[in-house]
Amino acid sequence: MTRIARWATTAAAVAAALGSFAAPAYADVIQPGSPDGPTREVLTAGCASGVDEATVAPTVVDADSAAGFYRCDPVTHRVATEEGRVTCAPGGLFDWSRGLCEPAAAVPEMATRLTAGKATLSTKPLKVIGLHATLARARNAGPQDAVWNATITFKDTTGKVLCVARTDAAGRASCTADKPRSGAAVLRGGYTAEYAGNGAVDGRYATMAPATAQGGIRAELPPQG
Image 1: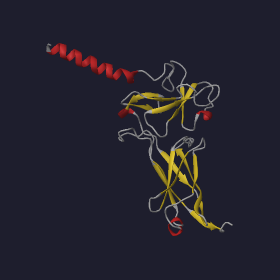
Image 2: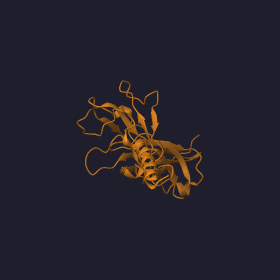
Image 3: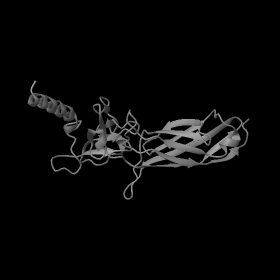
C-alpha cells in the first residue's frame, strides 16, 4: 500500500469514528437557540418539570451517569416507556448544554450544590431518623434547578455509611439509618451527605460536579415503649 493510500485509509477511519458524535442522538435534537427548528429542552428535575410547550419532547440529564440521559413523553410528562433511558456511543457523553452526545472532552461540567438539614437520634432502639439533603444546580444567577434521581450517600463523622437514597423531583433525598454501625456518642456529632457526581466509567469525566454538605443530629427522642 502506498503512503497516500495508507493516509486515505487512516483519514477514513478517523472520520468514521467521529461521525457518531457529529449527529445528535435524535434527529430533532437542535442546539438551543438554533433558528433551524424547535429546541429540545434539557431538564435536571425530571420530566414533569418541563413547562415550555414550544419545545419538542425534553430530555433529562442522568445524575448518576455522564454517558446517559432520559427521554420524556410529551403527553404524560414521564420518562418514555420505550427507550426511556439512552446511553451515548462509547467515548461520548451527554452534553446537557446542547442536548446531544459529544466527545467526552468537549462536554462542560455542571456545578452542583448540596444542602443538608437536621436529623433526629433515637437511642432505644438506636437509629437516626430523617436524614435528608437537597441537590440543585448551582448558578451565579437564575433558577437553582433541582436535580432528580441522584444518589445521595449519608455518612457519620467516622465515614461509616448510614443510608443511601435518591433525590425526588424537588432534589430532596431522605432516609432513616435503622442500624447505624457507630454508637450514640459518634452520631451526636452530625452527618455528611455526599453526591459523587456522574463520572464516566473511567472516572475521568463528570458532567455534573460532586458535592457534599454537613447536617446536624438533634436531641434524642424519648425511649420507645
